[in-house]
Amino acid sequence: MSSADIYRELILDYYRNPRNFGKLEKFDIDSHDTNPLCGDEIEMQIRVDGQNRIEEIKFTGKGCAISQASASMLTELAKGKPLEWVRQVVKEDVFKLLGNPDLGPSRVKCALLGMKVLKTGVYGYLGAHYDEPDDRSG
Ligand code: FES
Image (cartoon, rainbow, N blue to C red; front, side):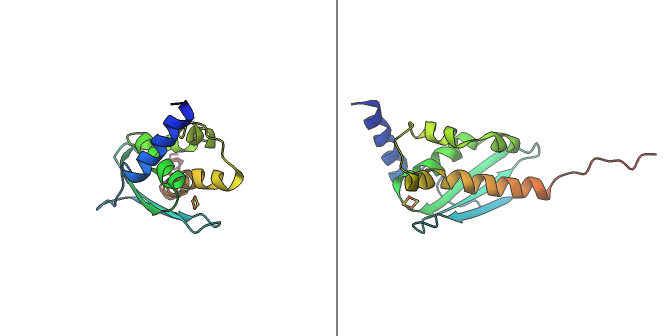
């Protein structure tokens, strides 16, 4: 088996048995987006702990194997990480999780849908919870 085959198998495995699939009862972040080209969707829910870390993360969605597998792989990677880590995630990280497959432009959108949902949700949360520096002294 070539390494491309192994990754193809891996993507299919994540598609058929997605890790972290489902909904959280309690969550602080709820983010959703669709791929405009095909209508496929991803929703992610995140519970944040007292130190601004991703305590729990789950996703649901429907769509192609690449979109669902990449979202699932991202949730595994994100679990336990500080929210700030999400700012540093770039598309190359997602491609790497998928085994750097040869993706055409429309498939790139599939692969990055989960990252978009994750970033949108976390950025919204960080924006809403930004603590103003306390300059009231004096
Ligand atoms: Fe819709 Fe891939 S075909 S996200």
